[in-house]
Length: 364
Image 1 (cartoon, rainbow, N blue to C red):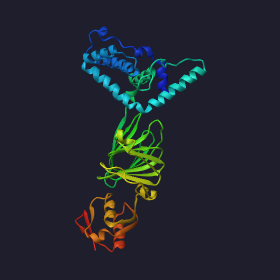
Image 2: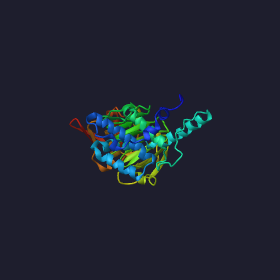
Image 3: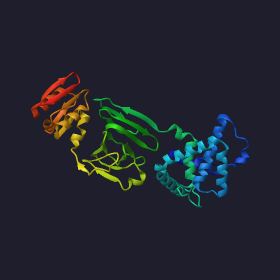
Image 4: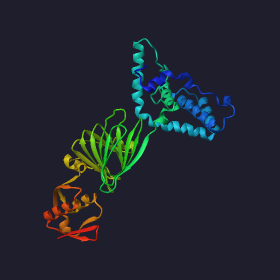
């Protein structure tokens, strides 16, 4: 079994009949107190969970399960913990099922019979009793709690940019005033973008899709590099390489509200509305901030100074509406505000007035 995954080694080493056997509540007598009682309840919850999920249960068994739950308040707590963990295991269930098939075929070809698949009825979840037992054995053996999700928060200040290498090797580059929460575990890879902008250079893993949650939708990697920007009113997804899926965070609606973006494409969405139409984007312009630059192509001056202002303290204001609408094109250094102002004034014939240390007024 040296070639088997840790899951399968556990599966074949554990005593499956024992895992499926649930002792009668009345046979246990008085419940132990303190930590021993809690430990006993955790073990009993595991046995009940395996039996319920495997599907080999009668109405009498269900009644006994209810009696067990009602016996001590923390029994239900222990059972609910396993339910939560099982929900998190959904993504790898099909993978483990295939691995069980592969291991069974290998054992039959070598004459060694390791198969533990029941010949009778399968559960409605599509998993064998043995697979349920093996997954929960991981929990019982402490694997899950050792490898519980690593949750971390990252923030950047105004004008700051930061590169974070996640545990899976994915690189996440945070732009100015960005806040994210990452959740990385054996079973999932999720980043929640609370505000700001980030570039994701994803290490692809078929077993664990990489997801970015931003507002009302989720961006799922299909082997790619992409940026996600979340402002006060909308979220914008731009693909640098590869493909992403943008789908509703509401599972019931996700199939109807799913859009695929490929390299050089962009789409936006608001908290309430649907996705915008897909547009093409200049990838070099999208990536410019990662090298300390910013690129504009025929953008109104009011938008240009607002965008540039995201990287600097203080404020640049355009008070004249006629001046606000004048178009600006060019590549500018994010680090040099004075050079930016000189270029803008040369292009628009505007004049600048300093009001204190933090405000610059542009006017004709």
